[in-house]
Length: 158
Image (tube, rainbow, N blue to C red; front, side, top):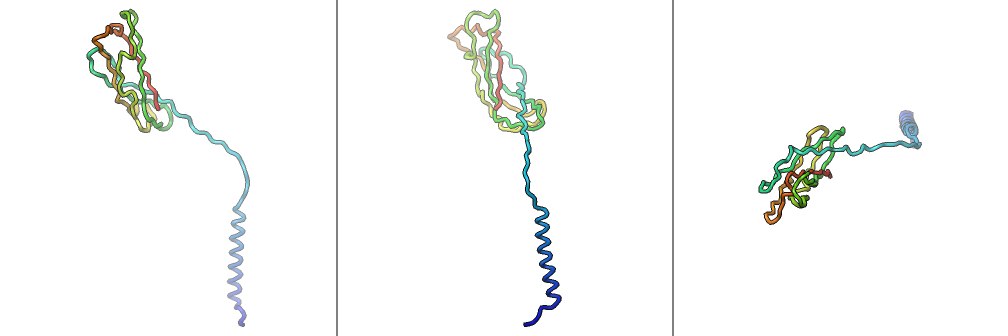
């Protein structure tokens, strides 16, 4: 059997040295330990719902009037809005004729309006709409109690 040459031995020693150096490097960079940290999630920005214009003249024989608007997003980031839901509250005018005037004297159509969009930060951004309001003209009922009544719109964002 032939003896390995000096060159083969040097190469073998270098390969072993490099392999052990790589292992040493891995051992050097590896570490174990423990610790604690905390993080917070920003809360939902409070959006304001803006109605476009003032709705006036909700009277008998007047066509349904549209309800629509925009948002104010004072937060630093966009907020997803699925829908806007509108409700009404009716306040009888002082001095109005006797009788009841309630939300039942009005027809609110499309109260749940789909938005399905990200509302960016800013004022008067995004849009919503699709609902209408109309006075229920009932010729068989005395409705003078609703003369001058105030209809307030309440909005909820989902």
